[in-house]
Length: 411
Image 1: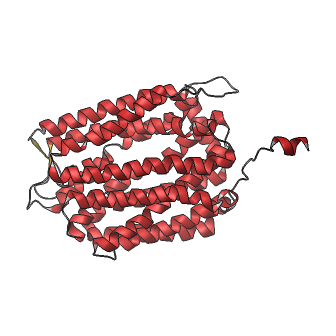
Image 2: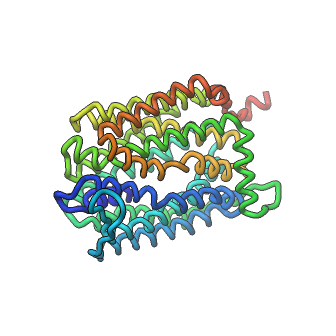
């Protein structure tokens, strides 16, 4: 869905219109989801820790389906009215672009509510020794599906009206709903204490995160890295169009697909590194490499160099996510886990929409190359800061629980 929306906004203006118009419109797309995403992230973990997680996932995914249908309707009718706004001389937003913003905000909100319920369900199916592999396989499958979808969307954007490309995320949401309906497993919460008010329980998640210095440092690191990544990646369509000279939607879908494939490989690869005893040091190293890869985007002018860089860049978030999820699932109590995930999400993603908006402003100030050099260099520099200053994170790790087999126990 994001491929479709970014492409739609990037090419919403006729030829000859200043590029800055599209850059600001893309920034508004990110900014449109700020408050609803943060608000839903604040309570998403508390909801996951007090309600049946299966029922919660089915409900919010249904809302995602309805929001996708609303976005499709906007692209079909595409009202031609323009709204003049402050900005560069003559800046305006087409009304149909403005109407995309609340639809996208609703999709990001439901996705935010979905994630803690999903991630807390994984330990119900596997033992701690298998969490790395399980998370890697789950998210690798999702990433491959996303990569295939991104390529298919790119092809559709090149040959048919944009609204038809939304059929792909609609089908994926629908398939998710069917899978959740037929799922036959108890996902109710295991609690020792009675539920309290939602906001009270949400605050308890933040308090727990504050006491866990190692997890708190991960959250701070993610806050910085996600902000800087958003600064650059929100302008990816313009990177291809203005820096590499590729205006065809196939290239944009292909770039997203390569990043996603890299992420899928990262999900699976990290499970073979036996990261558990040194989880924190692995996260620090991957953060540093992530910054170097993003920096490299600004140093090449060929798509054939940018694509392998995109693959390497994609490896890092896949690996980091698997390490983080597995560590939380192995070390946080079930009745608190959803709230820890949501507290981390609030902290980690709080500045992503601000980063997307800032990306538009930085692009206006230093151009597309400067945007990527600044963002990538800043992440690499922050990785070095983590090496020196994040002591609790450096010490973070856990030993997987390996049940004693029956023969060993009796002997």
